[in-house]
Image 1 (tube, helix red, strand yellow):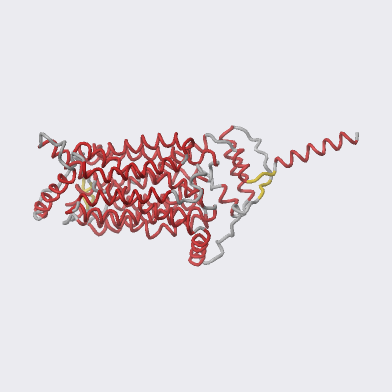
Image 2: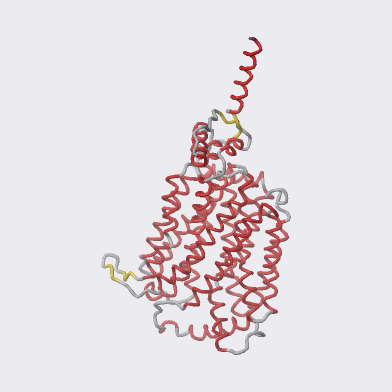
Length: 514
């Protein structure tokens, strides 16, 4: 009898121990299922929203010149530059707000505000209004793009995190492919109507800018149906809410209600001082100082890598449609293009453009774009989407270092080789040179693993801030070099990517983590 009682007590003790787990164990028990798959899809749309806002304006500006009073091609760079300036100036703040007040709340505010800025951009009456509204759009887009990877990653286990984030990038690639298709369907339409209250003629390009904000609207509304990151709530000491969120995920994934976890064991990584009661500015600087003091090597290398990749991927991408369009024209006019260097075509096209630019104010307003502008955009995005699909399958087998270095070194080779290739080969080398942007998503998964919960969003925001700075610097430097030193622009891009590939080996734990 005594033996039976002792045995029952022992069994009860074992069952109670099963109900007390660490956060990682509890998260693993929720399984990987419908909830995470939906989150991966939403995250891909979030990343796509930034791309639509970045590249969408480039399709709209050529047909918006007369409506906005644009008198110089240099004003294109001003409109594009203020968008990146909005991102750079606020990335740090959004990361802090996310770590202090929650991922979900910050993402909702940022994405819905970005959509409002898109509405304002679509009804801008002149150049300076457009500059102001694009700055506001960049201001808010910065919040959603810098936080979404931290939010997604905290719903995933170690086993599925890298692959899931790369699958999310496949969704992002599909969004990128959809942009030139949507531009072609909308911008080349002939309708228009006057809005007396605003004093503007509403044309297809205006609706296109509005449509570029739809992903932000969709994401902002979608998050009302998703919970806060359980890892964040647990790091804030809210154990009851964390268990409730985990139980909900478990039910969605399995259809069962027997989650039965009563308590979570705290760990050092999942314990965070609540900074809500501190002065926001002082708390932000205190958290930044903690990040730089505790992880100086990690944040330094990641930020520099983001700068180098964005320098080439966005800096050279800015001129991609125009360069390939000029190449296609040259191919139509010449019977033999196989031996002509790509930069010869580029420099001749720039000289012709500068000659016609002097008579810019008397030019006829453009109402639609040539098909080649859309076709080349779709070609590049197909390459991106296919690459993301392949990497999402390979990453768990090869690890991130192998993929990262392969992309860095092969794209670097393309930068050098363009100058020694004919038109046809040089064009494809240029396309793969821009493929270096694939490494951005992979680098974000590395960033997630390097930093604890209470510093993760801030680290991602700071690193992406340096990336956007690289876009600004790269676009201006490449634009300057293309005028007279085209070959130097490609050589510099190759050298930058080579340096990034070598720097990758210095990332802490890059070989161990997948």
